[in-house]
Length: 602
Image 1 (spheres, helix red, strand yellow):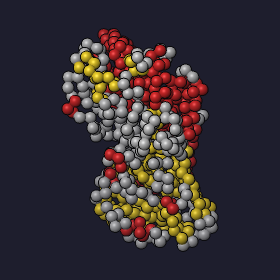
Image 2 (image 1 turned 120 degrees about the vertical axis):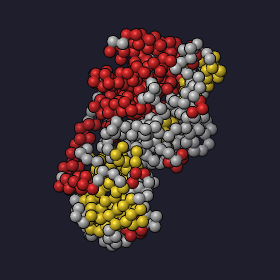
Image 3 (image 1 turned 45 degrees about the vertical axis):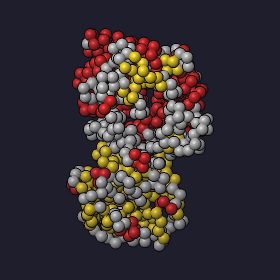
Image 4 (image 1 turned 180 degrees about the vertical axis):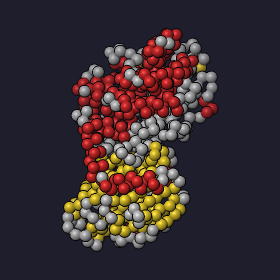
């Protein structure tokens, strides 16, 4: 799992428990991980002794988007702090040492530029006193405010550089190509170290020269910047969630779900994609917090690059191209489609909430035609006899059907579209979309509410107006009727649904709400009497209901989430036996739902 994260929208890095960089993204957040599968290690030489930090007890903690590390060894106390500065695509590390004796720090760089290890070059530049890795238009420079004491480059596959580091003395091999690593050593107790990205030599060299002259200022202004941003929140995890959320908004508008690549070992893929649902829900929370200037970039890419033919694909690469998928094209029939329709509807709903706060008429006039096409898609993509949306995949991306959560979101999307139509005087569409929203709401009540059990079905299957199957699995996402405000919060259908969900899905061992009964994803043992792993997202949905009904209970659920944050970071889900983090950390959606709940209560 990850214990640290820093980002400025163009460069981002994640850290493990040893303060080793494990992911390094540039120029998109989530695309081109230049450290995939690697360890950017840190070593310490003191009075003739050497150690890697992995052999020490390192305390890694988050402070806004600054990653702090502290450790002691061989009579010295060390603090390091990393932050991605907002002026350039660069990470600056502040190093301070207390203690006597000769000391050298070794920084090992294990780049796989553009996500692969073929065709890289690494060299020492004596004119800059820096080490540079490059491939094509991807360049990284590593240097310091103190002179480089020693350096080396070599073959990664033969571990030439790693072996060279372990006596504390580097061999000064000045260049290597192919699959390469490098290291530099700094013989100073206090200094600043830089990782600078750019498209060419001149670019990284120019930034390096400026950074060396103003290192202290560049570091401290970012401390003040993040302290100022998060001061709007009083709760520490709310501050962190705001920082994490803003740190996931890329300069080009991308909002990836998670940048942690630990999930690779399960499916050889990551969460480093734009899921329009996850991103829209995050943007909505940032809008609630007053940061519409950040989210505008996302809405621009959403409506100008991602929408096509009135709907959204499952997920996208951060550059706007289609991401990988497992939704088969064979389900494209007259009654089903291989998308998740809630992504389309949620995007329109979130944009309306953005518009209410920003009054961004300029963006609206540019994208209204996309809103119109999306609303007309939602109108036409319905069963003529029941009025329900046709079958798509659920928000968990597992089941094909007509899902309660999806239907609730379609209702909200159409209501939002009708409000946009009213703004621009599109009276015919305003009436059509509003009327259709009401039809969808009535169909949800008529066909998906199980009055016998007092809960909405997970989903149903449709064929030409006939319900051919109902899934009675108790499902947390039926709380979408609360998220999208389909019914009054005091409606008996809402109250009974929440009651059943909480009774059936609460994980008694460690607390928290599972996604649904017999959830198989990330199972780690014998789940007798355990419905599934507790998720931060689902538990916060429950808290958001209670925020409107029983604030004491909502506060209890917020306290539960705080208890399970590690270094200020929230995972996707938890081990139901001991409450430890499972899956990716941090998961952006988890932080967004926590921040939303906190804002609702505040």
